[in-house]
Length: 216
Ligand code: MD6
Ligand code: FE
Image (tube, rainbow, N blue to C red):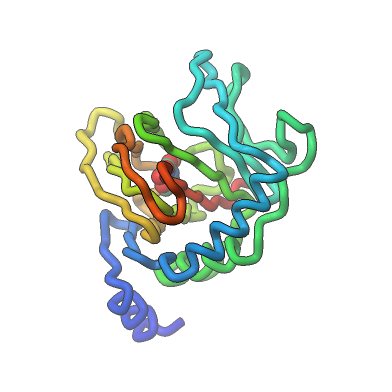
């Protein structure tokens, strides 16, 4: 893509730089959200949402599943990527084409032209569910970005710094918003504040987040 194309695409979609390496593409996935939602239904039929256990023994308030060659899992042994669903012992369902295409298109719009994710972590928040401040560091290559797609109810995303002590900014993520994050921002601490009550026509009383990673 030429610099001109990149700029045109970003202006058309209103790209916002959150930090060096982190870009918010507002509404980038809004048009295809119904297609994504249909594809998601068939993934979840094979590998339903579950509340994983943290290494410290707490049940996570966010429900999770995965698709793609690898899935992110947490249990008493720690965090890791695994080729199989620990509940069914089957491989995770393949990543739907619509998922992979969107992730690549968003990464490209943010300046990462060769993103080929092997994992899509699927997060479901109901009111009250939250994600504590963390870094994504279970992946092999931190030169690879992460693409994060928000569907359904809005959330307050906490966007911190490279140390846990830095006070996070609060950022509203709405249905169809995509955040691409890599480069200097790849290891920032981040989280999600407790989800507020609400109803969304596509997802009901939930927020769904798809995060695409190149884990291996
Ligand atoms: C969420 N997202 O938005 C959780 N991690 O529900 C994440 O933890 C995340 O959005 C790395 C990069 C982008 C993200
Ligand atoms: Fe994360």
